[in-house]
Image (cartoon, rainbow, N blue to C red; front, side, top):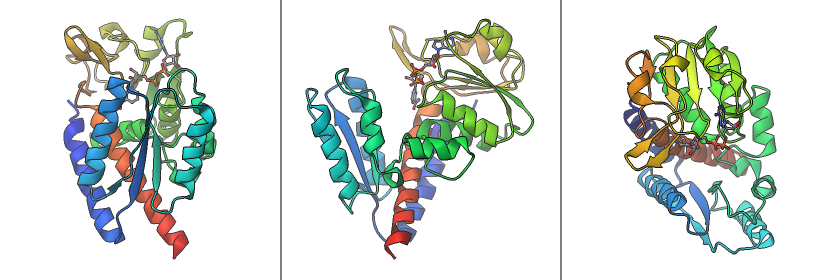
Length: 278
Ligand code: NAD
């Protein structure tokens, strides 16, 4: 069992040490639009851990009926504000808003979610930029657990800009041979059951069962779903855990690493901006 909570705690401690060494408190502006309860919980956790790591919480809350123009104006304001080192736009946005257009406005040097076209392009070319938090957390979990990646066969289930695509890019950079699976993949089990590493990010509760996993494979479950019987992931944990070599639980796997990666990106962004100012 890969203990995401413990690994995230270690990473946050390293971030706190980096913040202390920086000599100034980096500022993180989380932007929450509307009152979706799940998003509110995610943002509250990010803010709490941002402060615990010695950073400044510069949260901005907007009403659900905010216009595209108002939201884009706020992003421009945060781009221009020297106190702000990182901007995190909590997704999803209410339906009337175009999230891609808002993300495109974020200064790539403050894009601590790694979602701008510039940072996505750098990642696709295997170059250094700010990497999306959940994918960066997935790679750290695999590396810290000692899962061999170079030369391995990895299957990624899901191809979103937020998770699947960047996870595949990071695995490729780690020298894995990567198969990307998605909703049109003809035979999902045939693809994933050949893989040494399976990353599940389809957003479908318990999509992957025993028939999807090769004995001894590493299984990283990004999904998170609230069900009548509690939280679950995209992997049927009870069916898969007896045969997996490594597996992440839900909760306590990828989720905590996402926040720790966000804090890591924020201190990196602050350090890079400090260099520029000097
Ligand atoms: P998304 O809906 O944007 O993308 C889902 C992807 O899965 C799509 O590319 C789709 O083609 C693919 N897919 C859907 N059904 C499939 C199927 N039956 N077989 C194969 N592929 C299928 O979702 P997302 O934003 O990438 O998030 C995925 C999951 O991860 C969600 O459950 C989300 O809540 C969770 N998530 C967790 C964290 C975290 O910190 N733990 C962060 C982000 C997302």
